Length: 209
Image (cartoon, rainbow, N blue to C red; front, top):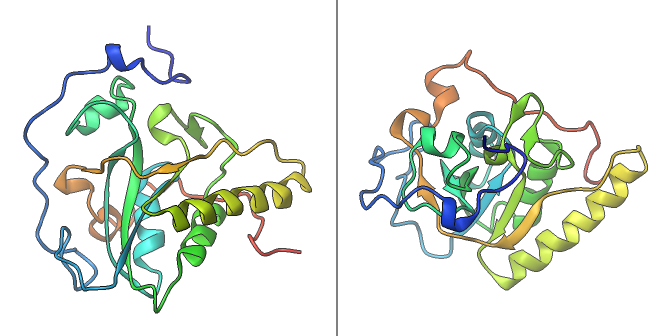
């Protein structure tokens, strides 16, 4: 029986799939494409903070975000399906891919959104959602992003420790390959406004004194 609290061994992961998931060309909410090309000077970010439905909405609502998409990253199986990821046999976590205008919103501000919108101390779960696909992750596209993400993790750890929260379990790593999730997951809460959203932080502001 698969342990939902442990990552699958790479040798035991499900086999790759050659075909990419097909997603709409246009974002359902924002006036932008899902896959680019993106405007010159725009930057990328990737975050895992539990169920990606609510997580994506938190980012598409932020001023300065050009486009978002949900998908899978941090695992071993190429082009996995949602069912495969949920089985725990691919090693991926659910993530939000963000393209943003750094002249309007900084990576540091995206990190603040990330930390404040989930509980980063829960390991292989988020709230009642259990499994390795719900683990917290901040995946970086540059050395500068990586440095900022590592520093922000330490900063938020100090904040929440004062309120008796445990150790942050967030993966802070260079960005692995991003695989788009199925079309029906993209901007899900815009299409199903009363749909499930497990998003919720610990109630501690990132900049709280």
